[in-house]
Length: 399
Image (cartoon, rainbow, N blue to C red; front, side, top):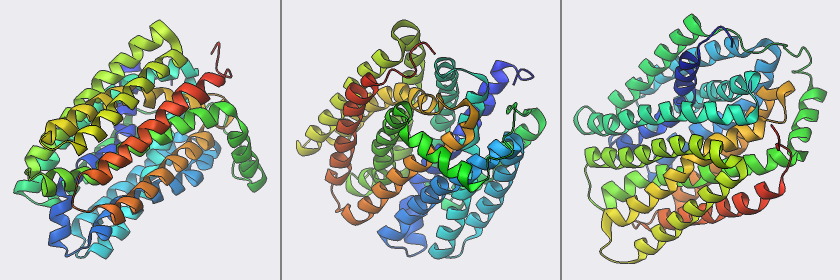
């Protein structure tokens, strides 16, 4: 990693961690149009997201040990190549069944990309340094999403959902070329036993038994719970329930993403001033306040779009603090198995996403309430993790 400058490393990490969110934010404005064009049910349309994310989570359990054995670079190049190819088949899919299939394969390939990003940071940095670096990478990710949200809305409105999916093909190919040309292997000592079943199962048990892993992974899981609830339901709420256009919806995503960018900047300032745990306490309060306000506004007639988007912007401000800390904190205790630890954390996050998507697929009733109540549930869970579990854990003190 010493061969890469920090700006280049941050650019690379931004593109890698941005692979999953851009697969959702660019795609969401097209989801209602896709549903009508392919004659799909609500549950089938949701499965193009939840199927992708479940495959994304499960695949990391395999990609992580592979990267610990053979290195991050070959796993990244393989995953990005498969991601790009599957994306091309998504664009050409003639039916909802084939689209679900290829989106699932794309999700499995994507697992290697995001998992390696977290592992690369742990290869060369302590948890505190890694949180600072990841907050910068997430700022870059926010800029990408600021562009992708309105672009996805514009493409869905004027050129169709296949054009939106075509952008993912270009993104995957461009990121793969950057990895091939610029990234040098960050894993200093590959583990020749990483793929042995006894080592794998032993590592998984070791991760789950570690209090830092449990606390910080639960933080990432719960924060992703409210984010995915919003992502999977908001296009239907704002477009079908509130009557906004695809482009207007893209601008709403831009507002929440902009708030997230500010949160990642705030994360770096808070870490320098107050450290990990106090930063999480403050962000937990913001998350809970935003969740309660959103749920109350959903039940008050006349609050409209501002009553939903302004509280969620507060939640996303805190999200910019929670995510860098949660993802680096979970991997921090395991420098010897960063790939496998990152993979386990990613798998657990996607289990939450799959559960949320499945629940929403059967709960969306033409009102804002399933989205508002689901977000509130996860905001309460985030506050509990931030104020109780993480405050009890002292493992990362001094790192």
